Amino acid sequence: MKFYSTNNKALRTDFKNAVFNSLPADKGLYMPEEIPKLDPLFIKNITHYSLQEIALEIAKIYVGDDIPAAALKNIVEDAINFEAPIRFLDSETGVLELFHGPSFAFKDFGARFMSRIMGYFSREDDQLLDVLVATSGDTGGAVALGFLGVPGTRVTILYPKGKVSKVQEQQLTTNGQNIRAIEVEGTFDDCQALVKQAFNDPEVNKQMRLTSANSINISRLIPQTFYYFWAYAQLRAQGISDVVFTVPSGNYGNIGAGLLAYKMGLPVTNFVAATNANDTVPRFLTSGTYEPKPSVQTLANAMDVGDPSNWVRIQDLFNYDLSALQHLICTYTYDDEATLAGVQEMYDQYGYVACPHTAIAYLASKAYRAAHPGTYASILLSTAHPCKFPDAIPPALFKQVKVPAGADYLARGEKQAVPMQANYDAFKTYLIAHK
Ligand SMILES: *Cc1c(COP(=O)(O)O)cnc(C)c1O
Image (cartoon, rainbow, N blue to C red):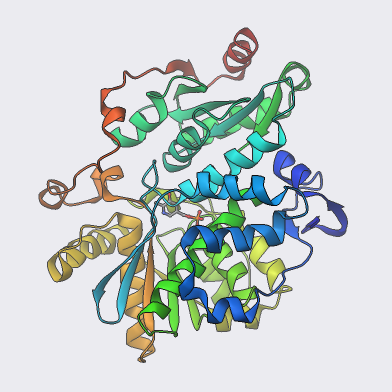
């Protein structure tokens, strides 16, 4: 399948180019030229399939022309090697836990799939593939652990000093092998600016083969559709076929994948976009005017995005039809105080300790149900394990949070990070000296 730019549908490229370039030259986003419906028989019989089998069925549609079946099967099975169970809070509300991968966040789906796709496409290249990534916390961990040990690749992560949680920092800095971390004296925006400058620097690009791992890469979007179908399969196995998904949203990649799944024939009644104070999309869906704002810092910091990059993709998916989007997507917004209360309420009512992003989804799904009574299942997407967000969970609850087993090696490793000022010359000198 070919992929077009949302700025110019005539501009088409193959999957490999779309993955390595991340963005078309015209700064649109890549979208698949076709969105085939899954075979209705497959959807009817979906309870017979595992998460990996569902994933492979979907991956084949988009990637089947570019990667032979046996190799694609290996990629999918190696990438999606963890569970995504639904935990029911009560008979009508379930939490789809997407945090059972190595970095304890849903970004593992995208990062692991992308890393293996990139590894596959560069398997015969002599030159190392250098992935540069700026992170405010969650993306870096998923990319680091996703690429760890993938032959032919190396990852350089820039993160803001003192602004990521302990578990996040361990995920970024204790890996060694093909992963290196730079601790920047500055903010996430400074980190992102350094990465952008490197991508635009001809001298660096002459000496290194750079690529980006950011969330707008099409190879991160596709694997995020897998778990929507898998959630549906789990519901169907319980005799439930009406579902509303509530997605805590920042850059709108996660919900964008859900909407793509919907276009592929997944029967979904409604989507709920749950946000923190960064409410550009909720305001747009109300007013019809897209007015991005600088991001504001919140407790659910993985959603602190004032101008969500994936929103154009969603617009493109619906041919810029505002009323279609208004019918399909409901939005609810919560401030930090409400978020903390939501974390507490999930614990008090259900004994469930959730990360702040998940708590926002919980509040939104509750508000949606109050406004739309019915017999459907409310499935809220839990995007991260609570252990990553100690500052956003009341201390008495956080005491009960255990870092999942399997991550013990993170605690044992020594922190290895290069300290750096937020200064491009310093970054460039480092890159070239260690190329
Ligand atoms: C990245 C992230 C989000 C936001 O997802 P988008 O795809 O950017 O909307 C929400 N919660 C957590 C924990 C995340 O890491």
